[in-house]
Length: 297
Length: 251
Ligand SMILES: Nc1ncnc2c1ncn2[C@@H]1O[C@H](COP(=O)(O)OP(=O)(O)OP(=O)(O)O)[C@@H](O)[C@H]1O
Ligand SMILES: [Mg+2]
Image (cartoon, rainbow over the protein chains, first blue to last red):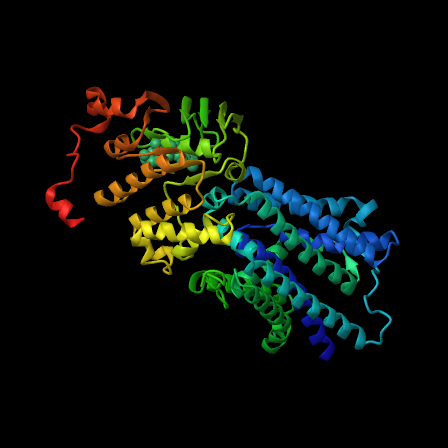
C-alpha cells in the first residue's frame, strides 16, 4: 500500500506539471491547446531517443527541451494565420500527426513497440528508497514549476498576458506584440510539460506512442477545468484530486463486486461527469481565478 | 504623415469591403471619415492601424510603406495611438491603471505629470480613478479610452467614433479637447464619426465613404456648407451653433 501511494503521488505530481503547463496556456494566455499531450511526448521521446542512442539522461533532457521548443514554435506559427478555435483543432491535428510519426518511424522512436528498459532515475537505491527519491524530485519539480508560473504571471509579463486575453486588439494597439507573447508562453509551457514527460519516461522505464493518445490531453483539460483555470494552485489541486480519485477506482470496483472492465469505464465517467458538473455548476473550478491580480488591486 | 493609396481590403475570404480608397492626413490636422453604417469606416481605420492587411494598394506612414507592419511596431516606430469603436477598455483594471497603460513607455515622473493633467481635464474620470472600468458608463468608457490614447502623446491618433454614447455637452467637450490637442501638439488625427455636424465643425478635412469607396472628399467647412451633402449625409439642417441658454446654464 505504501509503495502504491508513492506511485500515485508521483503520477499526481507529473500530471500536476502538465496541468500547470496547460493552465498557463489556457488560463493565462487564452491559448486553447488540444495537443498538450505531445508536449509531454517531447520529454518522453527525448529520454527514449537519448537512451536508445546511449547518450545518457542529460542529453535526454536537452533533447526533450529542444523538441518541446520546436513543437511550441510550430504551434505558435500556426496561430499566426488561424483564429483561436481553428488553432485548437490544428494543435490536435499536429499532435496526432506526431504521434503517428512516432508510431511509424521505428528507426528513431522504436515504432509501435516503443523503447523499453529506460533506466530508473534512482535505480541503484534499494526498493522503497528509489521511488521515494523520485517522488522527492517530482515534488521539487512541481514546486519549482509552480513558483516559476507564479512569478511569471504576477509580473509585468503576466499583466501583458492578461491584457492580451481580455482585449487582444486593444493590447496590440498599446504596443504589445501578441505573437511574441504567445510564442513565449507556449515555449515555457512546453518545457514544463517535457520535464514531466522526461521524468515519467525514467520512472515507468518505457516510452511508446500509446502514451500520447489525445484522450490524455482531455484528461489534463479536465484537471485544469475542475481545479480552476487561471489559478496555478487550482491546476495542481485538480491534477492531484483526479489522480487520487482514479487510483481508488479499482478499490471501489472491488467493493461493489464489479468486473475489471468497469475500471476504465468508471474512470471515463469520472472525467466526463466531473467535467459536466463543473462546466454546468461551477465554471470557475474548485479554486477560482483571482480577478484583478496583484498589480491592479 | 498618413497616405492611403488605392487600398482594397476585406475579412477572411469575404468580398472587398474597401474598394480602392485614397486618403491622406498630415500632422496638425484632423481628418474625419463619415458615412452610413457598414460602409467600411472602421475597416479603413483598422487597415491604417494594421489590424486588417490590405489586399491591394498601400498604407504609408511618415513616407514608409507600412502595409505589412504589425500594429505593435507602428505603435513603437510611428508613435501611433488607436482607439477602437468597441471593447476599448480593460474592464478588470481600474480607471487609473487603464489610463497609465497608455504611458507605460514613458519615464515615471513624466507619466505621473501627464496623468495628473488628464485627470484635471476629465473630472468625471478623476472621481472614479480606483473603480474598475467595468463599473463605468458607456460614455465614461469612451472618455477613458480617449485619455489612455492621449497620455502617450502619439504622433498619429486613430479614433473610431470617439463621441459614441456621449451626451451633447460631453461631446462638445471631447471634440474641443481633440481640437486643442491638434493645435498644441501638431498631432495627425484621423477620426471616424457618426455625429457629422460636430465632427465637421472641428475637422480640417473630411472623407465620406459609401459602399467601400470615397463618395465625397474635401475641406470640412465646405462639406458643412454644401446643401447636397447636408441633404444626403447629414440629415437636414444643423443644430444651433450655440447651446440653448437653458442648457448653457446647466453646464
Ligand atoms: N471582423 C469582421 N469580419 C467580417 N466582416 C466584417 C468584420 N467587421 C466588419 N465586417 C463587415 O464589413 C463591413 C464594414 O464594416 P465596418 O465595421 O467597417 O463598418 P462601419 O462603417 O464602421 O460601420 P459603423 O458605422 O456601423 O461602425 C460590414 O458589412 C461588416 O459586416
Ligand atoms: Mg465602425
